[in-house]
Length: 437
Figure 1: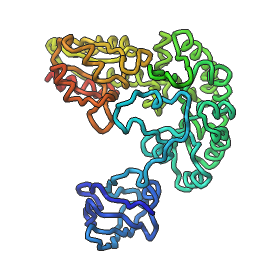
Figure 2: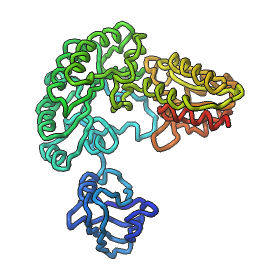
Figure 3: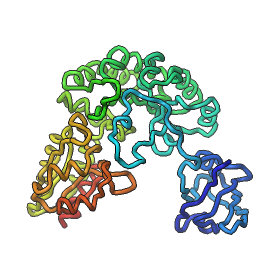
């Protein structure tokens, strides 16, 4: 039975509001065509003349004619953003982070999606293993581009092993078909020492480079290993030496790609440089920063935005004191940035490092810090009255930490005002100034 597409909200002043569409209405058809999901909805509403069939809560059906600009949004939000629910992941990846979560966390954290529509709409990565030929046809037909693809390796046998899915081996055929039809792709490699690194990584990058420019950037991120792997296959993480080996391995490839295309094509997550204690590549290395969410160039981006925003600021903070909370990997970087902010705004900043006891000390990125660890390690130790934290610690649409503690609860535990900031450095600067003036 087809799932009903119930309208959750109609934006004020929108075309839909003017047409009499309301919260609780059910969308039945657009231009006499059934709407299967959000992709078809987007495709069908990209037109200048629409006829919407709507069913009101009392059962009455309305046929609504709309004239609008071709790509103008109707202003409708749905209870299910995908409309027919996201597709579950059927892989059992040996490096899967969700499989390494402890029990007792909020239910939504355990859901693994592998849905090309989520990739297009929200930037999620997909493996393409649960896609039929018809699904590929829809991507091509509706121009779902770009999509983010978790490749990990182009070696068919190794990919089957890494994803623990016999359907995983046809990745090159899938990528070739999408590229041939003009679908752009961002690719990701979760790098596991001794498994898909070394020669396997070189071969994978050369294979993916063959699809340039449809594939124009590849993010390489280190495997994350929590303390909850007891019943899972043994995996090694990266250390200073092995992270440095990865940097040295792909540098000649990056140089070649850049000579040929003007861009490095493959980029490493900031964590590799931090672990190896190496200098980050320059700002220009990261192009348009397409994979910030993967931690690719985040620190350079953050630093550049801060320095740009500070340039024209002439504010005397009179030595006012603030606190920053960060993780172990980014601690030294944040200390350096803090000194620059202090000098420009005449304020004092104390940087507090939180060790990840919740997931284990091998997890060092700031986005996986829990409120519980902050409370255990910093309660009673922060002397400043205002504390800044990265918004990446919190749920995207709600002020909740991974351990289900709210931002307001953390404020009560620390007895401090807490200000969340996006990883765009200008947001941090503006919020500091907001506390000063």
